[in-house]
Image (cartoon, rainbow, N blue to C red):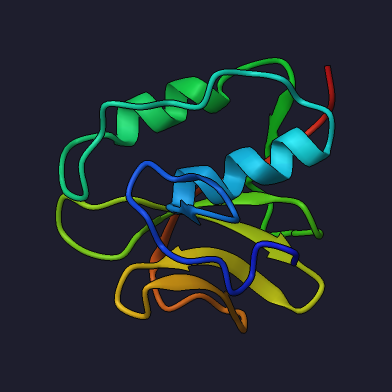
Length: 124
């Protein structure tokens, strides 16, 4: 929730200077104690779904495919053709970087995009 209101910035990794959706997830995982190098080299549009799925195919993440959710879960979404988007679930909705609003926002559930996958951080 502390990321809400941060400016949008493609490849941004700091709430002070700006975040994109990867940056929001990175900030949340860092706050949970997960140390890793956030992915780079991606664009707003492209075929990055396989790359995103591979990142979360790690023993520290549990794939949640049963329709349940809890605060902290990470959703991979499809807002449009050749686009993917990440959001972090909270008890109030989903936190994600919204390029159109130029900031990180809280959106009530359900999200207005197709869900591709969902993961739960299990820890290191």
